[in-house]
Length: 344
Ligand code: GZL
Image (tube, rainbow, N blue to C red; front, top):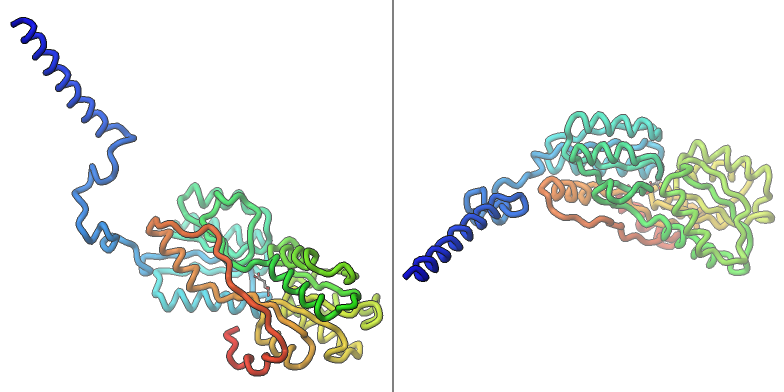
C-alpha cells in the first residue's frame, strides 16, 4: 500500500514539476515567440495585409551628392518623380555639392528627425563608417545607391547600382577593337576616390590589351567645366594622333567638355578613338556627331527599385544585399535612331 501511495506521490510530483517547467519555458526569453503573447493571428495579419506599412507611411532621406552631371540630374529626377508617384509621406532631399561633409551632416539631420530609411549616394568610397554606425544604432536602415562604399557590409542594408569595374572592362574591350595594332590613350577620370572612378579605372586596366598604353590620367571630377582645362593641358603635352590615338572619358559630361578643347586644337570628329560612359543624350549626340566611338551604359533611373527596397525594409522584409543594374554598350550606328527615345 505504502509503495502504491509512495508511487502515486512520485507520479504526482513528477507531473506537477513537469507542468511548472513547461510554464517556466513559456516565460523564458528564449521561448515565448510573438504568437504566444499576441492573440492568435487572423488570416489577414498572417499575410501581412493588416498592419503592414505602405508608401504613405514612408519618410525617406536622400542626401544627394551633387548636380555635377546630366547623369546626376536624371538620378535626382528619378528619385523625386518616384516619390511623388508613390505618394510617400516625405522625401527629405538635399544637395551636397559633391562634398562628403555635407552628405554626412544631412544624414545626421535625418537620423535626428527619425526617418524610416536613408538612401545614400556616396560621393566617395571611404569615410562613412561613423555615420553608418549612427544610423544603425538608431535602427534606420541605409540603402547605398549608385556608387559603393568601403565600409563593412554589416553597416548598411543593401547596395544598388552599376558594376563600375565591368563598365571599365567594357571600355577596354572597345579600345582593343578600335586599336588592334596598339597605341596610346589618355584617361579623363571621375571624382577622385569615388566608387565610379576607382571601378572604371580598375576595369580599364584589367582588360586593356598590353599593346595599348595609358599615356596619362587626370581627374575631371565628372564635370564638363573641369574637363576643359584638363584636356587643354593634355593637348599642350601630347600631340593628338601621334602621341595618343584614343581617350577614355569616365562620363559623357567630361567627354563633352573635352570635345570643346579638342575642337580648339583643330582635332576633328573621328581623328581619335573616344570611349565614354553613361549613355546620356549628350553622349548619344557625341556619337551622332562622330566624336564618340562607343558609350558604355550607366543607368541613373534607380528610383523605382530604391523605393521598393525601402518599403520592404520598413516592413522588416528581407532584401538582396547587392543589386546590380543590367547595362549594355551603345554605338554610333544606332545613336541617331535611339536618341529621341533616351530617357536621360
Ligand atoms: C556612376 C555615377 C557617376 C556618373 C557620372 O554611377 O556615380 O557620377 O557616371 C556622375 O556622370 O557624375
